[in-house]
Image 1 (tube, rainbow, N blue to C red):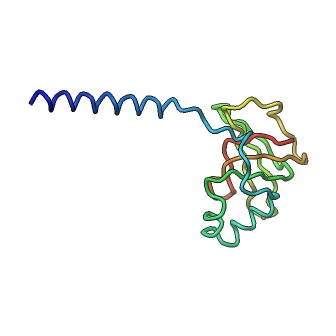
Image 2: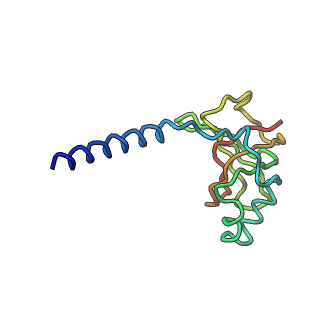
Image 3: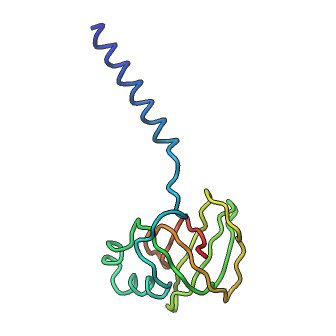
Length: 137
């Protein structure tokens, strides 16, 4: 019985330590990550419009570098900056949410500007969404 208590205690301590280290693991640097794809906003938007399942297989959870023209820029109550790029579609585009873990030289963008962002693709709702974006010069 005593061995059972000791082993259970050791497993609990090991599990707690593993959880602590996983919780405090540093975030992947999107700025340093090599993009799986480099394309313009119209290309990625049309890929998702044509076949969302195939586009999800291709882009989902991958680092993608997208260039395009800013349609609008907004900031949420939480301070997250979202920039919508023209995707060439009537109803949608590409939303790039700036990475809250990175420092940005610029956070206010004006309509008509041409920019390039690198971020992680999370799929398509009405727009294609990239999160944790950083501007690429």
